[in-house]
Image (cartoon, rainbow, N blue to C red; front, side, top):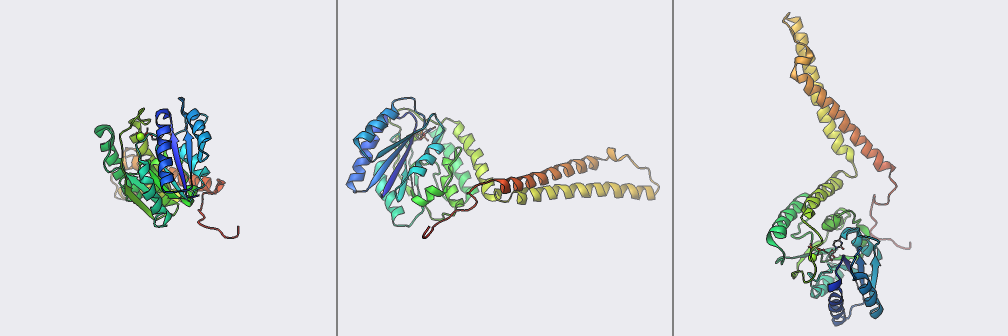
Length: 318
Ligand code: UDP
Ligand code: MG
């Protein structure tokens, strides 16, 4: 199969027919073999019955329905697990992404030039203050911390090699950072394509302002995990050692200066009256705790039964 189109959706009943018909017309024009995977992320409107109807009319339409709203990342994860096409394309259900972009996105992946191509909504049709400015800042921070040079991480329209979607774990609200996850999994050929963006036709946005707060927190998590996730001791051990050494030197200084004063028969003060005493005490305790955090991290890593310690890119005769 050429193409899997993965569409996460929450309460998008007005858009689904139009979106489906449009995608099908693009598929038929280019004679692709395809599947459309609708993942209903706990809609409370008529979205699911509509998906069922579409699936009766068109055998290429498949659906997954969540028990409740688990979030866009989880919906994408379910779609990725089910996707059978050589090329996987994700798009939003709200008609803001243009199906006419599919052939080019498909070609960029199918000729093996890229592992992942991300859409770039260069000209956006969203609220300037609520979305465009924060999103510039957000993309800048994501570029800086991840080293992935994309202008628009959060664009719903992206295309992937099948092996990419099978090897990234999209969880939490990490759908914003799939290119970073892909890079961390070892996929280096990450491209970008300017895509047409349209104003939301029906309904309203499902993410409020807290998308930016959560987005930045997730960014810190992802930066931390990619840098130190496999070796927490490298961070905590280093910080802990530095702290401990500072404390140790401060304690040594207190002791030495007291001895010198005693030797010179000068009056001495109680160690607790020396500010260095508290600095030494605090840094030694914090240093030990950081060290312990590093050890615990290492132990948890070793105890965890997981298959995400490495990624296999190919197998033969298996
Ligand atoms: N969506 C989803 N689960 C959620 C929130 C959103 O599947 O919990 C879907 C939504 O239906 C749409 C896509 O994710 O297809 C993008 O959402 P939206 O258009 O609200 O985001 P925006 O375009 O405002 O960034
Ligand atoms: Mg939208």
